[in-house]
Length: 389
Ligand code: SOE
Image (cartoon, rainbow, N blue to C red):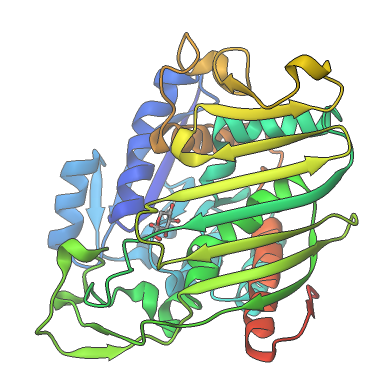
């Protein structure tokens, strides 16, 4: 019979909701589950918010004291769903208390901070994972399988984009995501690192970058109560404005350790592109294309197809594909953001149950932070910058 694993979740916002949902749903899909997620304690910034989150997200207890919570004997794993500036302190305390850790992305506000977290988890020997969920879209896991099987040959070129428009209106509110002291960076850390993670997963380590990182929208209205409301629906033209001190776009050329080259684009200014993630990979034997707006599908082209049917084919992911047997019984029934989080939860619990580190773990998260730092440095200097520890 499967064991229970007691989770303390720190943060009851957008990501808290996504993770709480995944704890409830994971055993409904992945059965027998590696362990049953027990939603033991939820922590938020005050007692009232914590209690509301407890009721809503189905936790047994609520608390506003994350330090006391991560030290509890009846907590096995700590799930960090708070803004980036609090990741390191909580993760290090959780590691010292011997708790397994699932941490939202980006791991930290840069490589130096990420390294302190990596050192802490390596010293304590616990299981650690970074919540880069998009690589867990079955179509992307299928792309990885095809690449591992050498079905598209040696990879020569990678093209990745992550385009959003929730922040494109200059009167949409100043969330913490526009403040360097809290977020560490802007489009680079918030969305660019998702592309970096998938590039590392599918192609290999990025070794050098040459980036532009402009900030077009330099002030935004302050939102009441510091609540993290995203987007123009919260538009406020009369509120006091404060500076944005992070980039809102990054466009970069990339070099990979294995000789592939490519590009990365992440922007907060792409009107009409809501959560537009695309990956195109060209190999010596074929190509792969993925668009998150059509996330049931992987487009694949094999160079040795007969000339009269040569072209991209559309594969709809389903039971024949990674994670598919555990999800829905027929292809194309509909993979969503929720499924990526449920799979993430499964992989984390599987890692805890087996004692084998999952991927991406804090070492992979640190590597993404090295790339993020290089992108920001290159954006400042206009030079190629190597990705070095
Ligand atoms: C805002 O850009 C955001 O919530 C990111 O922080 C998430 O990582 C992404 O999945 C959705 O958009």
